[in-house]
Length: 305
Ligand SMILES: CC(C)(COP(=O)([O-])OP(=O)([O-])OC[C@H]1O[C@@H](n2cnc3c(N)ncnc32)[C@H](O)[C@@H]1OP(=O)([O-])[O-])[C@@H](O)C(=O)NCCC(=O)NCCSC(=O)C[C@@](C)(O)CC(=O)[O-]
Image (cartoon, rainbow, N blue to C red; front, top):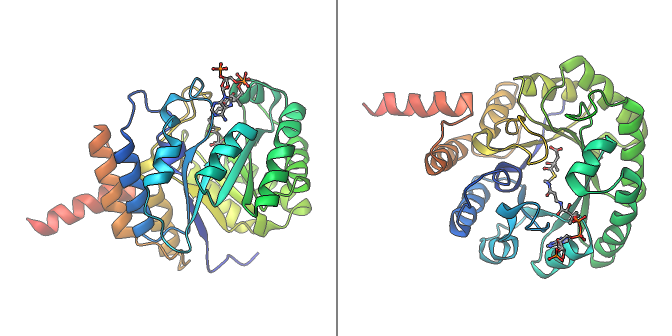
């Protein structure tokens, strides 16, 4: 299949990237992160979550973050909403897109949102209806679509089944997520091909964590399967609180570097993202997890000396 000439990158650093941080990241840092990413040209930024602060304390300031960010025209600011309470918060905060998040693995569904897959779909139904009524975009995320920390292998049929149910709820987009970053390219091609037999590929995104260093290869395999939306996190921030040992999302800088090299357009200013990636890594006092980001920061320093 011919590769796309344009790709949409959904920057998930402010939400997926920060949600697992042990120390509370001050609201003004989160706001500055979103603002810098808006300025870099992202068309979609996952800004925060409206989830229980008992479950994910780092996202407790979702409303304040949404209130304070400077919105760039044309950028969609998404938030996670597991239930109607979350949706009401998202609506009040004027989110452009709400994300319902389920799983292809029963065990992970229980750990992450405290209910079975069937119960989760029931819980999402009113959220989906309310989003449609309010004219808000709706996205559905499928965790553990390529492996589960509790159950191991996840059958392709389960992924396709959940994808179809999310589309039936009215999702504009669905995410096939490798929550623990274990997938390899041939497997990703198989799963993406199976999903896109039932769902329009323009509605499917790839959300890859990079635990085993396979994420770029998995994005390449997804491109070959017709996918043109990918999630990534500046400086490779992240990890899921309910997937121990899983590292962050694939780093945005690495994805942009690869796509640029392939002549695929994203509309995002890589240079600006590199600056933001180093800034947030310095703030969190940890090494920048983006290989391209680190290399380009070093190159800048070499040019300046
Ligand atoms: C779904 C629930 C709420 C069920 O949690 P529960 O304990 O079964 O539900 P509950 O209704 O009994 O609520 C418990 C408490 O939370 C409150 N509450 C209830 N809902 C909300 C809300 N929306 N906002 C604020 N507060 C809320 C509620 O009022 C109550 O407070 P209490 O009465 O005890 O004081 C909980 O399990 C939850 O919030 N889970 C979120 C987990 C999460 O955010 N995980 C990380 C995101 S998913 C992810 O990272 C994967 C993804 C998307 O990136 C893709 C991938 O890589 O796989």
